[in-house]
Image (cartoon, rainbow, N blue to C red; front, side, top):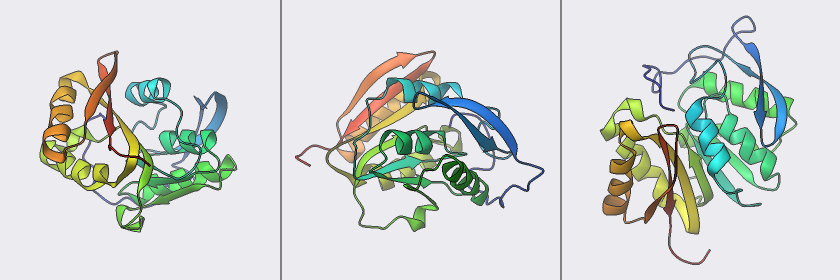
Length: 206
């Protein structure tokens, strides 16, 4: 998530039948049809940053609990679920509209391993085998730091998180902050079209 918006932390009810629109896109090597709606991130299609994340990140673990932090209408969560059908994918967002769209899209694609929930709906003691996120940088640095402080330490030992952040939105600074503040090694995986993909690792054997 990298566009300016004011609704990340504002609840929004599920979109009505007239508000939802059909979108044809490409996820996990397949052409798929999904639904989007206004008042969620990038309702017109797969945004550039998320596309880079999905193209550049290695395949997710085949099993375990995987996290999409800030799911929107679900492109990351759906990709994780399609690539790892034996894993449980937690699609987390703060608005009901986003969660409803992700649930609908997972159901229409026959993906039974997606759990679209608010942050408090994730079991507090659950470690993640992987975290993929296009975080909502425009909510401001303090709020982003708090998100990262809450979720990144929940990586399982030996697991990685991959974040995509615009270079001009402080990608390098966020990488240094994660290493310095959270003690989690962070590396730059790639730079493409003005975005960085960062890998955050939790040391230790899984």
